[in-house]
Image (cartoon, rainbow, N blue to C red):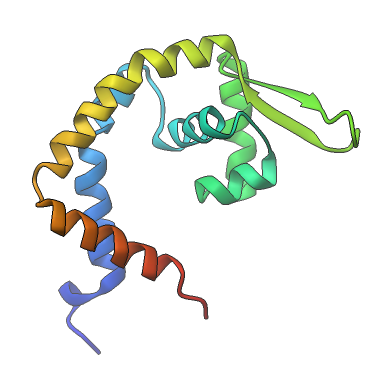
Length: 140
């Protein structure tokens, strides 16, 4: 078996921790969890999604997403409505409060993203993006 330090899952976890270290302090000010922010980001981009779509996009298990959605709804960040085409389908979207918070926070988070990516060359960033995309597309 390969050395513990050479484990790809471990290196990916460490890279995630370093990456999120750039963003966590800002999210903690709100306060908002990383998963909650991921949901807000997805809904900001896609406007309205079903829970299953949201879970897939955000890489959050459905049972966990249920609690996240409930907390975001309690905090006034998201709203739910029944689909006019199929009353069994529930569509989730951002409230005006969430849109305002997103607009206010986005420039700061985008700056932190630039701070992170400035640590690597443009070529390294392209290679990292390409390799991560390849890994994400591997199927068993």
